[in-house]
Amino acid sequence: MNVNYCMPVIPSADLEKSLRFWTEGLGLAADREMREDGRLVGCMVHREAMFFWLNQRAGEPVPEHCEGVRFYWTPDDLLGIHRHLKNLGYGVSEIVAQDYGQSEFFLVDDDGYSHCFGMATNELPKNE
Image (cartoon, rainbow, N blue to C red; front, side):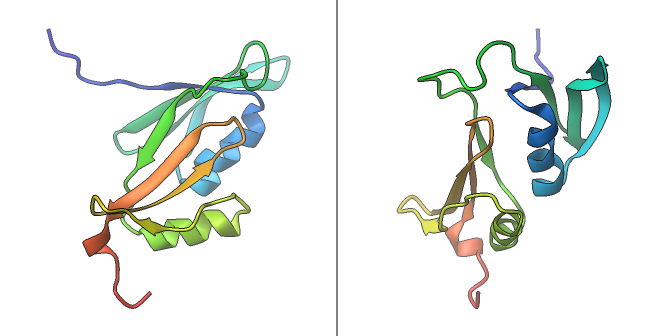
């Protein structure tokens, strides 16, 4: 038996607000919306072979003491996505060259999920 694919389901306290990070921030397309009484309660975000289902969270907005899901993103242009997310108003950390050879920055989205963006330090442009 093989498992060929996994699509994470990401609970959100305010789906309309969270969708901005996934579409404008990360450049994913949104479709397959599900609505209840006109309110967005679920949708797919995707690009190429990457798919996530965003779902309205049941219960309290961000559970206390819950780390939840963490994401590690590997962009083609670390400096560019850092600048882009910062320009959109997201609280991004500084880019740090780690001693294990990766340069990374972090942000926590509106639902409390941790996102790390990284690439090999030796692949960063030298003049920026």
